Structures are given as C-alpha cells and as structure tokens.
Amino acid sequence: MKNRRRIRELFSAQPPERRGAMVVLVAAMLVVLLAGVAFSVDVAYMQLARTELQISTDAAARAAGESLTRLQDLDAARDAARALAAANLVASAPLLLDDADIIPGRSELMENGGWDFTPNGEPINSIRVLGRRTQNSPSGPVGLFFGRIFNLTEFETTRSSTVVRLDRDICIVVDRSGSMKWEVDDTVAWTGENMWRFEMPPQYDSRWIALDDAVDGFTDALGQTPQVEWVSLVSYASDYSAFGVNNLRVEIDQEMTSDHTLIGTAMDDITSRIFNGATDIAAGIDTGVAVLMDPDSSREFAVKTMVLMTDGVPTTGGDVMTAAQAAAAQNVTIHTVTFGAGADQALMQDVAAAGGGHHFHALDAEGLQDVFRQIALTVPVTFTE
Image 1 (cartoon, rainbow, N blue to C red):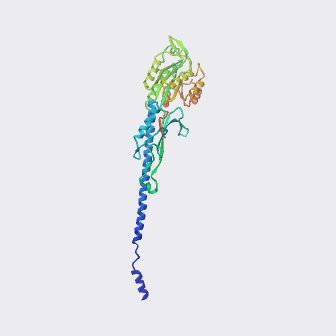
Image 2: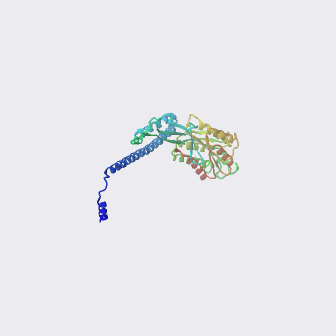
Image 3: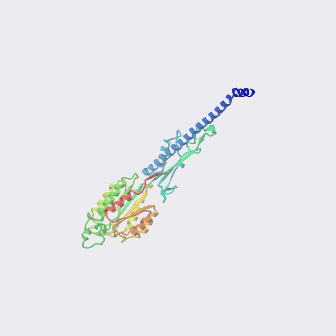
C-alpha cells in the first residue's frame, strides 16, 4: 500500500518552475537571429557594391577606348573615363577616378587566346581602368549597415577593366606590273597571243579586274565591322614609259581616308589607263609604311596594317625582306596575298612572318575575293578584361 501511495505522489507532483530559463534561451536565439539577418544584409550589400563597381568600371573603360579612337587624344580619353564613371553610382555614391586609375598601355593577343597588357607599353592600343572603393581612393570605402555589430564599419573592393581598341589604319599595296593585265589563269610572259594587252588598259578578264572586284569586297566587308578603319591605296610596278604613258615605280593612289568609296574610285582610275612595267615589291612596302606612319594623315593610336598583294616575283628594286623587316620594326603588321600560279608564295610567306601577319594564296578571281574579305574580318575589335 505504501508503495502504491508513493507512486501516485510521484506522478501527481508539479514540475519545477522553468519559465525564467526559457526567457533567457529565447532572448539568446533572438540575438543570434538578428545577427544573422544583419550579416546577410551586409553580405548582400557588399555583393551589390562589387557588381555596381564592375559595371561602372567597364563603362568607364569603354568610354575611354571610344574616345581614344575618335579623338586620338589620351587626355580626352581620361576625361571620358572620369565623366562616365562619375555618372554611375556604386553603393549610392559616384565612382570617382584619379589619373592613376586610368592606365594606357599595349595589349597583345597570346597563343592561348588571352591578352597580355603592358602598362604604358607602346604603341598604345589599350586603356585599363581601376575602379576602387578603398581607403585611399577618391570615393572612399563602402560603409556597412550592421557591420558595427561585429566591429566592422566598412569594406574595400576593387575591380579592373581593360579595353583593347583595335581600330586599324590599313594600306592596301597592290601590284600594278604588266602581268596584272594578263588573263587570270595565264602563266606565260608577253607573247604574240597576248601582246595586244600591252597597249591597252586592263580588260574584263584580266587579273587586275579580279583584283578591283576583290578590293571592292574588302571595303564592303570593313563596313560590317564595329571598329573604325581608315584605308589608303598604294600601287607599285617600275618606272616605264610606253604609248605616251609614264608609269611610276610606286604611286600613292589614295591617302588615308575614312571614306572607303574613295579606294574604289582610285582603283577605277588605274583601271581606266594603260600601265605596264616590272615588279618592285620593296618600293611598295616602303611607300606603304610611309603612308601608315605619316602623322598628318594617319592616327597615332590605330593599329597599322598593310595588305600586300602580288601576282609574280620581284624583278627590280631593293631587297624585299629588308623592307619587310623595316616595316615590322615600326610595328606594321603585313598580310600578304599571292595571286596565280606564278607568284612567289615562299617569299610572301616569309614577308608575312616577318611582319607578324598571315599569308594567303588565291588561284582564281573568286578565291581572291574570299581572301580579301577574310583579311577584312580577321581582327577582333574590342575586348574587355
């Protein structure tokens, strides 16, 4: 009986008072919860600030690149970068840049497809912008909302963006020797069968007309690219007089221009006249370089590119490789085009290699058009790092 009574007393006893302990536990959990919420808010804000900084930095770099292309002035490019950066908010404040944040330089495409940027490298073709929200930056660090709970009141972040503007000054250097008036597939010298061409302007079935069409296709293709290209035309042959016409060894048929239709007009002018002569490729290269480097007509910050075309072999003038190496020393990229079975492909491959460009060969008129179009569309324009 005593045991039963004892069991009933144990089951009927009131539990001890725990209300105070639960209050402490709930309060502690609330503090942890609020701290977690505060931490999440600041982390999200930090990520937003980083994103805004990258967007603003990219925009500033693109503005600098566009200005450098259009105005060819580094100070104007810096002003454009600063103005656009300040128009963008990062963590509710304008992004301010100083001169040290805007770095001109040279970018080169590496074999792995990446870009190698050299600060203040020349010739300048790039601008790097550093977007900073740090203690020593003009805009200062980013303030936090709840970070002071963890004894953190601000954080620092940086971003960079490099714009490569590969706008090109292009000189098309074409063969104007007598063999350019032969039929496209003709591989023999002047004979009784084709001597009549010697006394005439180039005919519809000639190599020159095929080249004229290819150059038209080249300038048309340039109109499809986002970059800004200026183009010039040089033709070469040899000093030669016949039929009352004085042919010059080399001519600048069109100075550097942004109006690509003028290149077609210059080609048509050559098409309408009698020309003959030998093949002075070195003179063509030398004159093309002079046009590309002329400070009065070319652009200081444009990539210099030469498209060198021939249907034969050098028969007069200076050493072709010496001319090509001199062009490369002035950072002129040379793409070479050989046309027809009689062209010296090996030499032109060496010229392209010396000039850091590519060699192309065409056997017929359609192939020549394809080659010129490919060169026009080869180079990338703007790359943001």
